Length: 417
Image (cartoon, rainbow, N blue to C red; front, side, top):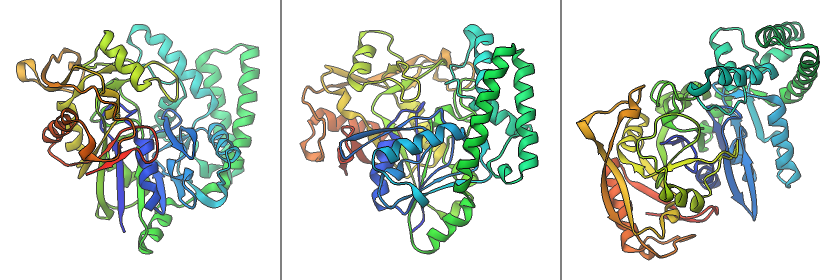
């Protein structure tokens, strides 16, 4: 069996974690291929809720291997905290976690550098999580980043850590107390890296072995396609690539190994942080969606901005990812609306994901809503007629099948078509 890639088709928070966990029941391994601790995937299983930031969702499944690819970035302190969280909940990691030795590490100073950068930008800030993701990727492409594999060369690792500590002190102009605190954080960083080193592995080799033995590997994306630095709403994007093609680069396999690309699409649209959002509803309707969908960030706790589904952007994301099918999530949240709207175009017939995106004025198709509660529904035939029409309308806009519909947070709250 080959690789299945799972990607978000919006600005993240589409429900990828729940669906990856659901699909992981048939997988040998789940491999994260992008992002860092700025991501937040929530999984509910066996009556417990798990909020993961970098660990692959597949680890919640007994016997499934979790992998983290080279194009991700890692805070070793944070990942140890996540490992302890799972183990304290009765989920044993042991030898089920593998991390690419090529992964770049987030030095403690990067967080403060990123936070200061956001402060300096004032009204023009990006709205990052402040977890040092941007500075980590910057140093990767400056070719002086710290990799996990560097810890096996004590002298080189020490030189790199000292260099980036001094860089943070000089950049931020820290006082004596702040320098002392930073050194304390760096000590924790170093100790955590040494502990995490035991998970270092050649991810490409391990995936190849699984595929040769007939196993299934799920490549798990982070954030969403509209946050991709090349194809997203630039410059209000993340730094790691979010589209399906990035899975091959990060995990070390060729495109011929990919069997399917599953796009995860929320039945409406949300966004965290700054940036353009053509279908945003900054009114009581948007607030109703936010409350019904519990739209608050897993990583930051920030209230998400909410709006109608943007069919144009969704179809664009399906195209750039080469999706073979789509999972529509949180359909249950739309119960109780008299009418629903889907953006099917923009006035003046223009389209851009660049700096002029905030000038897009949506043109809507209006559909009837439904009053029935569909939370936890698992049968297509049991859906209200208006809900079916909504799904089929979205499917026609996307041009690919909607193969499944998530109707709640539970592992089995899924309709398969």
